[in-house]
Length: 134
Image (cartoon, rainbow, N blue to C red):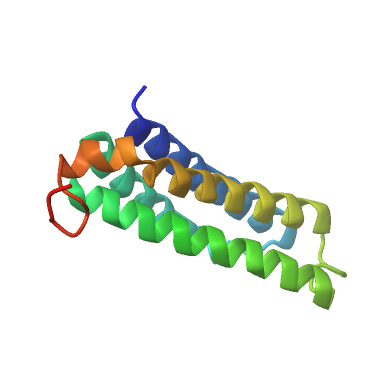
């Protein structure tokens, strides 16, 4: 499997995690309002994964930005939440922490895969990202 397809699968795994988390939250809290938002996020991950699977430039760019920013903010949010005690008093804090950890690491792994030189060459050819010849 190529690196781009590996990144696509990792981003799809994130989308599945979002749907599972929304379903568990809806069941535990009795509040289904989070599920439509999760469906939109999952739809976005499918769109990005298709772009990566087809080795498109937009798919690579959106994949790097999406997975990099969301993965980084997830890790930073987890650290800040643990220090501030945000998870205390939640219905299932262990599940929240596990979700944030697994989802963030999955996205950061996708970012690292996409930033590999061989994967950039697969999308952009012999030029650099900025368009200059190497």
